[in-house]
Length: 116
Length: 110
Image 1 (cartoon, rainbow over the protein chains, first blue to last red):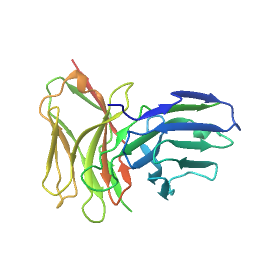
Image 2 (cartoon, chains in turn green, blue):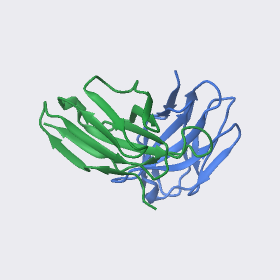
Image 3 (cartoon, helix red, strand yellow):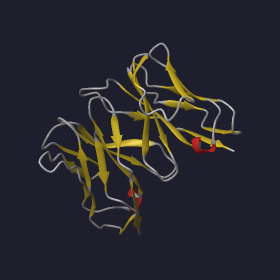
């Protein structure tokens, strides 16, 4: 079946511009996660959605970052006034549930963001 | 808060060598434990998992045992192959948040 998809796969933008990154989770997965992976580093948790609500936004680096999810499906991560330090691969993952047996996360291929 | 500490890399081994990548964690309660793998140019994939103490996760010849007493989940493989070259991430799930280690790069030489 279809996995987690993300778009665009690559995004190059100029400093100060806004960008939107999209994630399509696996159908039926109620939990959705966003992570950031800087070059050569581990994954940094950004935000978690259960359904359409985000009980934990603690990982968002600044108020320039926001995310929403609609219809318990697609999620969009928006970065306003991008800075060079925002350059990274942004990964989305989904899982059937956030707790219990079906909590395995499935990752999308990521969006590589480059801020010039 | 919850945290994961894993062995720093890179780890370079010859084919058929024995592999151990150490991972220890700090968490309240009984988190689920995972190893994820990222092959060159590919996305993260679940390698194996364990959800309770003394569980052994296994896949593709890799194994890891959930050790509550030592709060560890070390990854092992008896005989590595060139195709195992990748970055390996130890991960815990507490209430709902996943905490990833920094990753260990493994390079296997023919």
